[in-house]
Image (cartoon, rainbow, N blue to C red; front, top):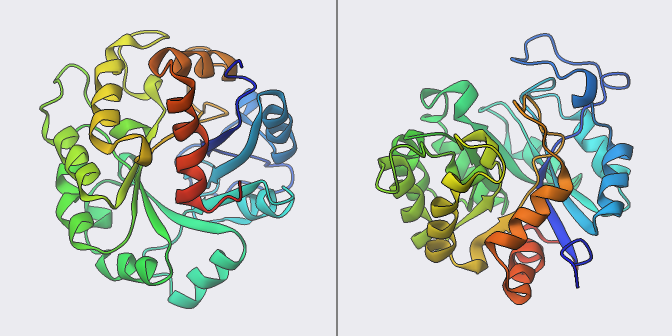
Length: 276
């Protein structure tokens, strides 16, 4: 069976529909042109590549804490999509519960945009997430995870790390941020997305300088805590990226079909509550 036919869950993607849901004025980036990606367009992509379910991530770009476009995508998916929302740090338990009732399963922190200090006072928010069985999703880069580690390790919330932790490939596996990521993997409360290589690789596709980091993550987290993601529609990409080559690359990184099934299907089904 080709990887295109294998059942899979895409665990990181975005929707942008400014015609129906105008962008917010305070956002750091406003996708345009081919970056605009509606929920209907993404469902076509899912159908073409055998993606049965998807975890749609609310973006800081365009929408920030305005989750209307995200919630609309979930509501119109026929049960195929769940979501990760961007919220204010002072959001209440009731507001979080309302989002959970609409298909939100996690809350996104993005220190690559907001900085680490923005999240250092979120202990109470993490406690609320744990109480509601929602996870915190972290997008960090270089050594930012080392700065966030104590906050995350002391919380009871489940943790999902975006895009392999976006390490500095020139610094190697021993850099503090990547070692903090591996420590989170050993905790048993964290999951990592094997995705976003173009965000930290210094080489063009297939991003071979990222491969040692991917293998270290698989070894430490194990396949029971690794998931795959596309990052469609590839906002701010500096070179052409397509869905098919990303899947073929993943087949190179994990050539055994049974191992791939764990990452593409079994683990995300369990972590994010998709019915299989």
